[in-house]
Structures are given as structure tokens and as C-alpha cells.
Length: 380
Length: 249
Ligand SMILES: Cc1cc2nc3c(=O)[nH]c(=O)nc-3n(C[C@H](O)[C@H](O)[C@H](O)COP(=O)(O)OP(=O)(O)OC[C@H]3O[C@@H](n4cnc5c(N)ncnc54)[C@H](O)[C@@H]3O)c2cc1C
Image (cartoon, rainbow over all chains, first blue to last red):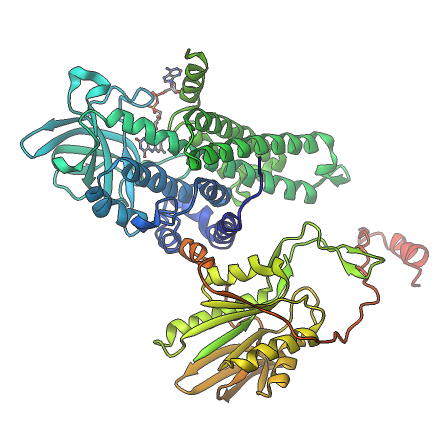
């Protein structure tokens, strides 16, 4: 057992912290209010290598391990989860899937520009009528001579507008149900693709979320990822890893809120003393710290399992469910500690609370994580 | 052209300082070490100069006098972008010993520009830069807040009381830099962090040098005393407090 981080892991954590505390903090409130995409920050974080940090250097990635990724995500999301989700989708949903399951040609053509951050990617699984139950894909990929023809609508797609490359999940053989599903690499500027309006969200407002419509979109056969019918397995395996990113995001939201709550409770006075001296407040802080430490350990253990090529799907489901749920609890209590000040934008905690809510919903709701966890427990 | 940046390994600026051994030694337990902030700015400016120089500046080296535990800090400098590093394997006893150790190494392999921070954020001695220049017998400019190179000419500016002083000099020289030399320190990129272990970190054995300083005792500033609020209407209470509690009237 070793709880020590390496010098490189600590450097990455510090780099992420420096960027978040020095740069992201400056305009995060304004970007949230205006729902403005963080173009400049994406550019800077690309230069620093965050957009493809876990991809092998062979494919122009940062070559970092998943533990470093958790440390970086926590620091970024303490301040700004919109940036966090842009990084997470590109690294763990898009790059990871291509690196793990793509052909050399696909890696050369698609992975390299995504890993270097020259281009961004999006992951298109959810549909208006297929969220938690992703087996019911209505988007179809009809097999033609040398290509597939895509038709249908995807919903809630992060990076939909800023991405150049889409990983699209669609049904090829409806009679085979989820075993007929495929995954494809699709260029966003292919004819027949159109976007719905930017979703006006509750939180993570400066990330870019749209629905995406496909009308007779031609996709070359060589853009299918894996064997015919591998798509659903591909999506589930990719999401196993993606959950670590979102768990770390939730962890960052919670620890960001706690840091602010500690600071505030040492300054704010009521009834003649700092509110931290009221035990009701001090105990809230204590509860937060224990929850956050647990969430952090689950995140790091999932990351460690993944880095050491051991099965991690169950642990990452636990990490995601727990971290997301405690992020909601911790941010709610942080707002409470701030009192009226917590309810206005200037103090950040209300935004963190809005951001926390999303971590319980996307990349598998908390309920869905519990299905994953309990099924693993009950399997013989 | 080659630039050398002196790097001091100091406790993180938010460290809670404690002393041991009858208050004669700084307690290094649990301390997080960082590049001295002024040195980090010096390195940032050196890297900018190299990038702007179209190849005229071939190399940025960092140098540190310290034991092996300062290597993470040195590698951070390599991750930020320095090309190679020298660590002189000795405990940094005082400004004199540090400057003497560095001078010995630099004499054998001189640099065109040497940059040192105006002070280190731990002992705040403001001595190493000036001493090093003397040992090397090269000119030094202190309190440098900007440094630009135009062909063979170097233009420096210094903050002086009530204004700014602009100077010109030629290499070799030593610049003792302060705030303003660069705006923000650089954040290392993933690539830089990966490369750091692959770049040369040359360890050189120290010479015999005496330390000229003996630390008798350290003292921490007294904790800030509580501030008492007095209602502006209540002059009587104020006078009473000044008289009986503060005992200044
Ligand atoms: C801002 C945002 C960004 C997103 N980004 C992406 C993206 O980039 N790519 C992508 O593909 N998708 C994305 N999503 C979609 C997201 O993953 C889905 O919203 C999520 O999986 C839930 O699906 P749903 O919204 O259809 O809810 P539903 O599946 O309809 O669920 C409704 C409720 O029922 C519960 N429920 C459903 N089934 C069960 C069950 N069997 N047992 C118990 N409870 C159940 C759910 O937990 C939930 O509480 C994003 C969503 C949002 C809001």
C-alpha cells in the first residue's frame, strides 16, 4: 500500500491548481451568467496538454496516468466544471475509446489531432428517448456498399458545437437489439448534420450542449469502431472510464465548496464570534471533510485500478455515485454556511451547487450507478 | 548565447513557520518546497528571451546549491522549460557559501547572462546575486524589472524611488531581478513535466567553503492582538481604554 503521489503527479496537480486559481477564477461567474463558451481557456489548457492528457505520447497525448487525471480534474472543477467537462469528454469518452478500440489508421487520422487538442471531440450516445436505457437506440446506421447511412437525433451532447470529431452510437441491426449497435467516427462537417439550439442549462453553463440531428449522413465503413455489433459494449466500456472523470469532477466541486466554506466560517461573525466557533457550523465542516476524503479515495482507487490494468468498472461506479451525491450534499451545506451570501452569485457556492446537480445525472445517473453496483454484488 | 538562472529551493509561501533546537533552526517537517518566486519569474523571462531570440540564445541552465531533496524543485524548473540543470551537492549555509560554490562552477563554464532573484523568500538576505557577480568579476545590476536584448545590446530597467532608470549593458553581466521582470510564472505543460526527468541534471561536488554566518536565534512576530471596536459616540470608553488598557495616555 502506498498513498504517496509521484513528483510528476504533484506537478500536474499544481499546474491545474495554478491555472484554475489564477485564470479560470477571473471570468467564471461572467461566463456562467452569459453561457459563454471558454474559447481562450480551452486554447490555453490545450497548450498545457490537458485536452489529451491521458493519451499515449505515441499519439500526441500527454502520456499521463489516470491518477494524475483525477488530481487535475479535482483542481479544475474546484473552480470551473464547464472546463472540467470539456476536458473529461475529450479525454475519457472520445480519446480513450479510439485509443483502446480503434484501428491504427483511425488513431492516426482521428486520435492524434484530438489528443494534441488541435481538435475536440464529442460522444453521442443519449437520445430524446434513450438516456439511462441506452439500449433503445433509435438513431440508425444503415449498411450500404462502402458506407453507412446515419439517421436520427442525439440529445444533450457536450462539445457538440466546438467538436470536429463525433463518436456516434447507432443501431445497425434492430432485430439484434443492443448487439446490433455500432460506434462510428464522424466528421462534424459531414453533409446532413445539423445542431439544435444551445441548451439553456442550470449549471455548467459555459460548456456547449446541443442536440444533433443526422439526415442521411454518409460515414465510410472504415470509420466503424471495432467489429460489427460492438457499439454497445464499446459505449459501456468507455463510460466505465468516463465515470472516473466525472467522479473527480464531483469531488472537485465538493472540495471547492468546502474550501470556501472553511474560509468564510472563519471570517463571518454572528453572536459575537466567528461562525466556525458555533458547533453546528463546525460539525457541518467536519461532515464535509469526511465525505470528501471518502470520495477522493474512491476516485483514486478507481484510477489506480485502471492504471494497473485491473477491473475498475465497479469501483468507478461507486466513485461516481458517491462523489456526485456528496457533491450535492456538500454544496447545499456550503450555501447554508454562507447564509444569504451563499444565495448570490458573487460567492461561487450557489454555482457549485448548480454544477453538482449535473454530476448526479450525466454519464449514468446515481440510480443507474446503483444498478451497476448492485448487479455486481448479486452476480454469482 | 547562454543564460544561467539561479534557483533557490524555498518553503511554499503559505507555510506556517516553526523553529526547533532552541529556536536556532527552521523546522522543515512537512514543508512543501517551491522555486523561490523571484527566481521563477527570472526563469520565465529567460525562457521568453530564448523564444524571442531566433536561436541566438541556445540554452537556459538553472543552478542550485542544495542537497538531493532540492531535486524536485529543480525538476520543476526543467518542466517549466530550462534546458539543463546543475545542482551543487552542498547544504546552502549562507549567502557567502552559496555564491562561492556557484562561482567555482560558473568560472569553469561561463555564461553570458546570469539571473538571480532579488532575494529568497525564506531568509530574504538579498546577497547572493551581488556576491556572485563579485566572485566572477562581472558587472551586476540590481532591482531589475525589465530585461530586453537587441542584438548585442542589453537594455535593463530598474525601479528607483519616484521613477524608473533605464540602463544599457553588454554581456557578460548578472541581473538581480525583482517583480515586473515577468508577469506570471509559467505553468509547466504535460510535455514539459514528462520531459523533466529526461533533461540533464548534473550534480557537481562542492568545494570547501566556510560559512560566515552563525544563527543565534530566530523569533516569530508576536501574534496580532485583538482589535477592539469602540462606538464613535462613546468617547468616554475610548479614553478609558487608552488610559487603563493600552496605557498610552
Ligand atoms: C448537460 C448535459 C450534458 C450531457 N452530455 C452528454 C454527452 O455528451 N453525450 C451523451 O451521450 N449524453 C449526454 N448527456 C445525457 C445524459 O447522460 C443523460 O441525461 C442521462 O444518462 C440520463 O438520461 P435521461 O436524461 O434520458 O433520463 P432518464 O433515463 O429518462 O431517467 C429519468 C430518471 O429515471 C431514473 N431511472 C431511469 N431508469 C431507471 C431504473 N432502471 N431504475 C431506477 N431509476 C431509473 C433516472 O435515474 C432518472 O432519475 C448529457 C446530459 C446533460 C444534462
